[in-house]
Length: 200
Image (cartoon, rainbow, N blue to C red; front, side):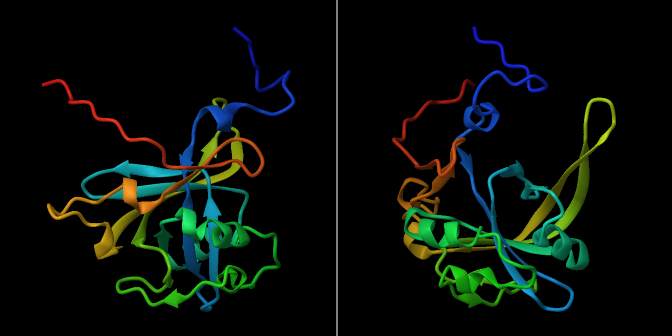
């Protein structure tokens, strides 16, 4: 086995985020207290609880999304699909504070129902969320890390009827989900499906 110590790297690229993946993408729209809209993708994102539904993502550094969420307590997660991959990628451009990334991606702001930040009109799924916790990460020695985990409770879901099967279940395979890999520009489209019955 190759041994990789994160404190003494011996590979050209840190393999951590390539191994823990592919990862779903947290495509977050937020709004500042002053009404400035921001849209940004995050690769450290996942679902964390079922009832109530809670999702979480990590901001490495104090980015606009984190600052906006601290001010308002709200955000929207938008599903990134293969059709929207180029637009999603455009929204991660390093632009000055205050630039609305919806414009960079040629995307439509659609009003949300229960929160102030708009959702991406072109996305087939969006979760309106209200913050439940914001945690600053620490090392095992309790030293603060320049990373914050934002947890949000989903208060409303927008789902395209085209992705709901006749029995009312969500058609994950048809949604065209894309996932983040580990290398620069490394993305995946959701692959082949297989079934396993859980033990009883």
